[in-house]
Amino acid sequence: MPLINKCSVCNDNVNADKEISCDKCKLPLHSTCSGLSRSEIQCVFAKDRRVSYFCNKCIKCDNEVIELKKLIMDLKLQIDELKKSNCMKKEEYSPDSIVHEVFERQRRANNIVIYNIEESDPQSANDKTIATNLIKEISNIDTGNIRVQRLGKQFNNDKPRPLKITLPSSADAIQILKNKHKIKSLNNINIKQDQTPMQLKHLANLRTKLKARQDNGEKNLTIKYIYGQPQIISLKN
Image 1 (cartoon, rainbow, N blue to C red):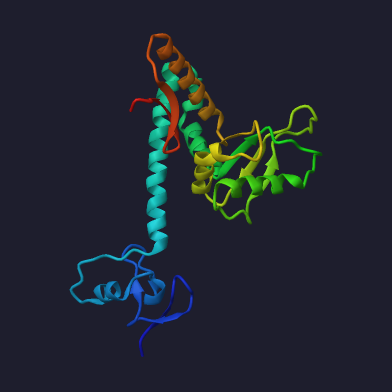
Image 2: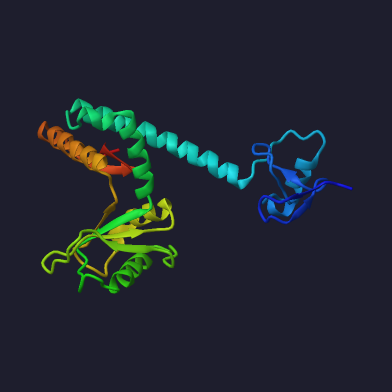
């Protein structure tokens, strides 16, 4: 009698002679749960197969590792720049601080912050409606699971507190930031990343460098976000 395992995707029984195993985590799954086409499944079952199969969980894990490595490299470059400009204290670039910064950036990656949206009271239920309408105006993001929060402890009639929106994914946050110029329903609002103090220091340092280069006669320069990181670029390019 063939051995029966549990599918790692649907958790139903799967016969050992009919299962596919991920070549990385070695967990079994139904061929129908693998996401492979019929011809691809035949290749995986072939006795002399020359292809490898990786399940979606392993692929996602690998992608997250790649993104994390890129984040660490970007962070290292930013820290080096801030150290050269004396914008950081020594304890701010210790190993513990760097690890904290990486996790803090990951935690904030799904967030955007909107400024200058009026609030009618400290517990305004209207905030989520306004946020939902803004998002739908410039994207097709599912707003059913967004979370909305005012930043700051005290309601002030003169100056509305920033509105932080937590989205389902960092890709959703990037999409809104790219399309924010399309918003027409509200005037004078500003949408930004939810940045850490170190990111704000880095941006301020870039602005100082930009001004110095412009004062030295360089033209057509601006700061633009490329793959989520601010850089000084030439508009001619």
